[in-house]
Picture (cartoon, helix red, strand yellow):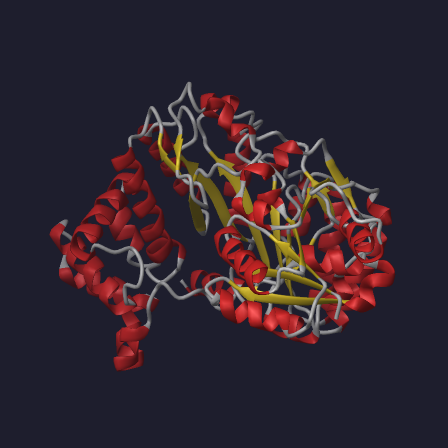
Amino acid sequence: MTILLSTLNARYTHASLGLRYLLANMGELQSLTHLQEFVIGTRAVDIAEKLLAHQPRIIGFGVYIWNVEETTKLVALLKRVAPEIVIVLGGPEVSHETEAQEITRLADYVVTGWGDVTFPQLCRAILHGPKPLMKIHAGVQPPLDDIALPYRLYSDEDIAHRTLYVEASRGCPFKCEFCLSSLDKTAWPFNLDAFLAELENLHARGARLFKFVDRTFNLNIKSSLRIMQFFLDKLKARPDDPVFAHFEVVPDHLPDALKEAISQFPPGTLQFEIGIQSFNPEVQTLVSRRQNNDKAAENIRWLCQHSHAHLHVDLIAGLPGESIESFAAGFDRLFALGPHEIQFGILKRLRGTPIIRHTEAYGLLFDPHPPYAILATDCIGFADMQKLVRFARYWDLIANSGRFAHTLPHILRAAPFENFMALSEWLYERTDATHRIALDRLALLVSEWLQSQGVHADTIDQALSQDHAGKIGKTRGAKAKTDSLAQPEPSLLSRQARHLAA
């Protein structure tokens, strides 16, 4: 074995699309290249042992915000026990502010940006000469038609047990300053016929769960309709063996033709991730986000009322110029539209994003360690930001999980943000924790808080008896004590199934 491609995924169910692109484009080196993925939390010494068992000459690591700290430890260990191995880094985390990072100091080479062409070229030079003189190599962006598609490299094991990531396009035309895609000049589509042929092959091999990583799936409606028709045809041909598709969509761009296609998907087969981020026009302007808020709200309401699509709608707390009061108003507006889940995120300073230009003017303070979350702004102090962090965690456990679907209305009532914040702070006072709270204990705590708010015990018991959370102790007995909410969801479909059941 000469070349290893490796990364530390956030979960086993995640399969690295980036590494498979590299492997697909290795050319004559492909037969000498092997892919080996790991999961964060695995001991560095165990990973090193498995990598070194292949006796590699080169190891290429995909480095991301969620794995950079553990990958740094791994690279340091490899350089200690096997300094002759050439370490090449790539990925978004090392593509910006490159020379300031410890991991890049440890490594031999770094490929910034697109690696499809540049990584194979670098490997050829390392193996056959002349030896590359520069440590940092800017990735060449080729025409998409020149890039070999990687989907045949998904193994049978991947298809059976993992989410398959696919992309019909790369890039984004929008310039939202908190997002790395703001650095793209535009969006570039892959050849649609070739892409659909790859999906056909995956489906024939048994793939049923497809997650699109396109930043703007509905940018080109003609392409969106052809892709959706692919899935509708599969659903019609085999309704007893349904496919599931996840797309990220632009919220204020939903023409009638797309609505017609969306309305044909049955329950449990379609999921949309929709980025609202903020409903505050001044904040949107400040971070260069173009969005028609009224049209976006109208589209979300239509999707909730006239389709079976499962909706994840994103908000970001901590944007420059956004106060808690402004964020709360946006949260309540979004909740009133009825999405199945509100993905409540905390602003992160991704390396290379233009958001840093507001640092001084708006008092932005970021954690210096990954994931570089915002700690305070001139509008939201550190203590209040921590309250928002806890709110986000409890919201995911109680609201987004679908485990408290019948109890949630009694919690939120007429003031969703205000009332859930009150519950959040009460839960933290009682538990001093936001992780590893057993589900039956959380149900008891929610019941206790509701009673303290004047909700009748019979009303609470009736609501909880209909919820997954209320049934867990009765149906699983002692085992319920081990049902920690810190455990990962088994699949994209699990939460959706609970929302559908409610």
